Image (cartoon, rainbow, N blue to C red; front, side, top):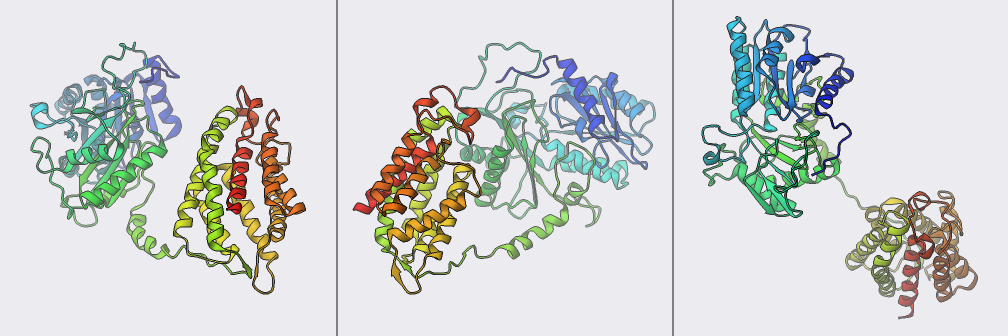
Length: 586
């Protein structure tokens, strides 16, 4: 776990986070003394109140706003608010004319304190109901005992449906009934790679901390232990998590029967420390396994940060079985989830109409990606060209460790991997591509792979150069079919080098791949000799040793020892060209 924080005082942290709510949502007011965030609706409606320990943001304070929560009560980090805080929220902060529904997660402290406040409010004549959400299947029946399942991220779906229904003017009786119905039709499971550190607390030496290779399946949102620890990869982890939720043969955890005939809402929730990029990969894995293994295609997919465990390095999966709520087709669980909410923490930007039209639009837009290339009158030996290029690419792949090492010293270490990825993709294409005698078509096949497989600065430079090379070849195509010559290649290379100059100011001496490319083109143009040109490229690359960079990331990233290694991009290109020379001699 990481024990470093920008704000280490837990009291100051909670208070300032609450104060930020009114800055980001002008309709929200904060009662800091009682740690209550609340919102006044424009017309009377059932008020939805929730809350719990801090550290789960955006749950619950950032869910306050029109269409979602009317009020949220915060405790200290991972600790329930007091009954008095909750009582003040119900009696003095939210509109109670139409009644109040309290939605709380199934944790002893929350149930007792919110429950006590509910009873106090009832004793004052306020109409109040309470729904307790326990959706976590990480805790089975045996282990849960009388306490039951814990509440985790599925609670957010209950709150959203209840909030949207209240905003439509429904009665407390209906809002409470449908909130409970929603809670009864949700299963959730979380997993994490690490426990979290609570600001202000001393670390205990990490005796219970997970090992580097371990994942805790079923970990709670307060560092509670899960059902098991396992060394596993993402596909196997997701398989286990979905099995916990959906396997009917698991009598200890089969809390809800979901079949392929049911409409299902999927929520993939970030526990706080997973990058947006990685959460996207996780979401894709979950969606694919639901479809491939369980034949379930969710009608809605929510992926984002809804309920955290501070900066927890984990995620949870929640499945809502869409059920008829008995209010007619115009009001359903899905439509209530789609309804707008002016709460900063609710991350669901896609409208119901977009979901409805999505499948049809995807089909309409799906067409052929093939781009027809106008043939030229140039001719080459396809087998010989493939063989020569294969030799060149294999040499580049073999050079990857050196290129990566050099780039680790002077850059960010990704140059070698990028070149290797592009080379391997081209090799795969060469095995599958149809035979052609036209060098323009041959080159276009290479270009398409480079543009898709190689990213970053080097990928853009190679793509621009090769596209310009194709244009240069077309300009030098004869009026009738004829073999391509070194002179035609040289003229096309001269053109592509000039074209590249429009997009980068790099020149020989700037410590870039141009230091290898320029001498290759120059010597080939003057002599028509590939062997001499390749050697000149190698000399140019070696000449970058000790050369001060004036362009690229090396200018500000390069560490110690840069003067003893060549520019990684120049070295990689030189190896490719030396390999091409070898291939042409075979």
